[in-house]
Length: 419
Ligand SMILES: *[C@@H]1O[C@H](CO)[C@@H](O)[C@H](O)[C@H]1NC(C)=O
Ligand SMILES: *[C@@H]1O[C@H](CO)[C@@H](O)[C@H](O)[C@H]1NC(C)=O
Image 1 (cartoon, protein in one colour):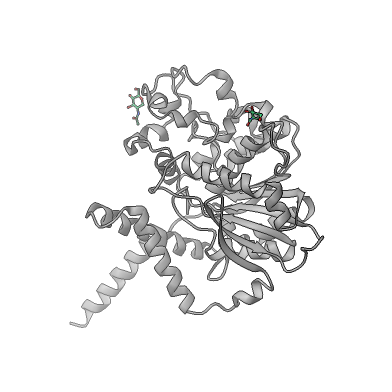
Image 2 (image 1 turned 135 degrees about the horizontal axis):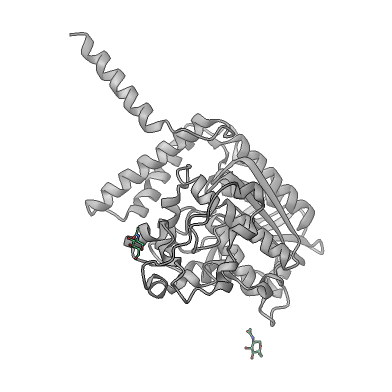
C-alpha cells in the first residue's frame, strides 16, 4: 500500500500544525516566528514536566538544560554577526560584587579622569530562568557599554528552585549597594550622578524594589539617578486586570505561567493557583488588604480609558480565607512594588517604563507609571502596540524579532538622553 505513508505524513503534518498554530492578534508581526518559538517553549515545558513527574530532575532545571542545548545547537549553526562586531573593545569580566556574581562590561573610552556612566542590569525569567550572560541580554549590555560609554554590571542573582523570595531581591540589593559605594564608583571611573538600574520582567520587579529601598535609605549618599523598567512585574493582588484578561493565552507568558512564577518565587503552595487566577486571595472579606492598599492598584482609576475598554473589575466579595495570611509575601512591597505608599514613590528617580500591548503585565507597568507621575516623578512610558512579552530579549540572532530591535533602540535612546 502506497497510501499509508501519505496518510501518516498528512496526519503528522496536521498534528504539528495543530500544536504550532495559534491565533495571534492582528498587530503581531512575524506571527509564524512567534508561533514556532511558543511551540518550542511549550514542548520544552511539557518535556520538563514529564521528567519531573518521573523523578529525573526538577522541571525548572530541565527547562534550563533544554534551553542551553538549544542555544548550543543554534550557535554551531553559525552566527552571522561575530561577537567582536557587537562588542568592539568592551572588556567583559565575570567577578563578584560583595559575594554576588556579576558580569562587568567596561567601555574602551574613559578612565583616568574621564568619568563614565554606570548601569546595573537585572535580567528577566520569572525569578527562575535566564542569565544576563546569555544571548540578547549579553549583546544588549555590550551595546549599552560601547555606544553609551557606560560601565554595565549585570547581576547573576540566585533563582528558584535554589532560593525563594527575598533571596533574589537581597542579592540584587547587596550588589547595588556595592556598586553605588564611593570606592567602587571611583575604581571604575563612574560619575556618581549618572548611575542607573534597568531590568526586564522579573528583573524589572527587582529593579523597582531595589530602587524603592535605596531611595528611602537616608544614610545613602549615592543613589540611582534613573530606573528603566521593561514590562516589569509589579503586583500580586489582581490577576484580572484588562491586560491579564486580554492576553491570558498570549505567548510567551500566558496568565497561568505568570501566576505560577509568583507562587514559585513566594514559596507558596501550587494548589493556590486556581484561587489566585480568580482573585479569591484578594476578596473584599480579606481585612488585611485595606481600601488604601487596594486603591494603589485600582486599574479602574489608574488606567487611561483606551486600556480599560469595556472590561469589568473582578472583585470577589467572599474568597478563600487565609491565603494572604498563609503567604504574607503577597503584601510585601519588596515583592510587589506597586503596593508602595506615595511617599516612597515620590523619592524614586526619573523613570522609563516600557509596556507592550500584548502582554499580561501591560497594566502593571501602566499603573506604576501613573502612580509615579502622581507622586511627582518624571516618567517616560514607551508603549508598543505590536509588542509582546519577551520581545526585549528576542532582538538578536537567531531569535530576532523586528519589534525586539525597535524596543532595544528605544531603550538605548532613552538611556542616551537621560542617564
Ligand atoms: C543611619 O545611620 C545611623 C547612624 O549610624 C543608624 O543609627 C541608622 O540605623 C541608619 N539608618 C539606616 C536606614 O540604615
Ligand atoms: C473561591 O472562593 C469561593 C468562596 O470560598 C469558593 O466557593 C470557590 O470555589 C473559590 N474558587 C476557586 C477557584 O478556588
